[in-house]
Image (cartoon, rainbow, N blue to C red; front, side, top):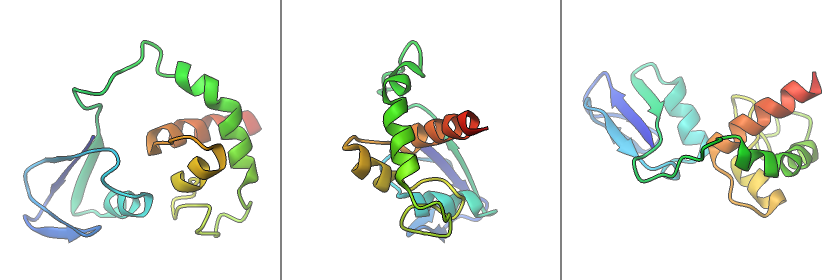
Length: 124
């Protein structure tokens, strides 16, 4: 769940009017570009928390480990040019929809972020 508050009540970004009080949005409410716009906006404060109804695995990396090779292969399939907006976000992360399409799996932005970080560290 994303928690967002605005320094100015009614400030608009990513197609949403943001109130001054912290408001929760489900993980799938925004697309990658909207999240990026919100994160980069100094008028907004955003954080990500696990919603009370979301199951937290005992080992948060256990599920990722099973998908690690699939993520690695999917990331390797992307255009190396990070200016390609079909494959990459403005912040340089792989597009969630592209990874999900390549892998044939549901992929969250959080899973993508962890997998991409691990993929980068493995390449070093």
